[in-house]
Length: 235
Image (cartoon, rainbow, N blue to C red; front, side, top):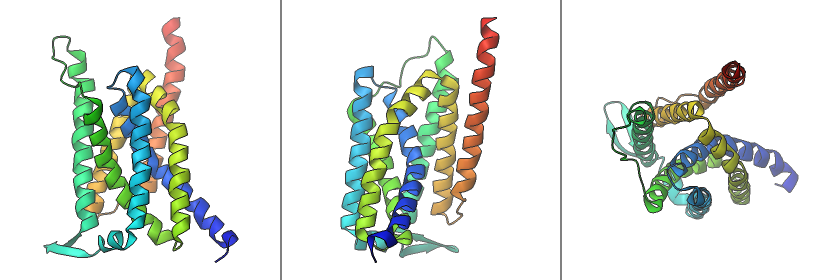
């Protein structure tokens, strides 16, 4: 196939990877908010940079990645593959982290006498980012394999996607950090993503279009509320 023949699949794959990468950006942004200001950009850059390295490395062992779709064992009527186990583990981890953060923001955050148990080191947060990077990377690579058959197209899509995410991560992180209501909404978004990963690991796939549309609508409503309520407060 010529370059022109691969151009449309390349653009389509980049667009899909960017959309799926929003989950990663939001997760990293929320974790980075726990660090001092001077370390937040560092966590974002390291997290996204290592995500790119991880995806490129997984592409290099593509034959192993494809074997993750093979059934390892069966429970009842559900066949479990390596990919399913990774999705289940990642989904449960995301559910745990999102629930914990929502509880802290909604309950502990309002208690002045509550001890601050959320302090984390840069290394701890980077490890958490890498765990989710692995889950999203495996899912991303298997999705890419199903769309294109040229390895250079996959490599190009990974590099371009991470570049877009690096540029977009700081504005998104700044916006979420400045508006607490959007932070809770972002955590709810991650909660839904965690549930969808668990469901997919159990072979109950939820169309991602439904998830992203509902969250985009929720963000739009919250944004309109932000713009309309703010003038009322100054009167």
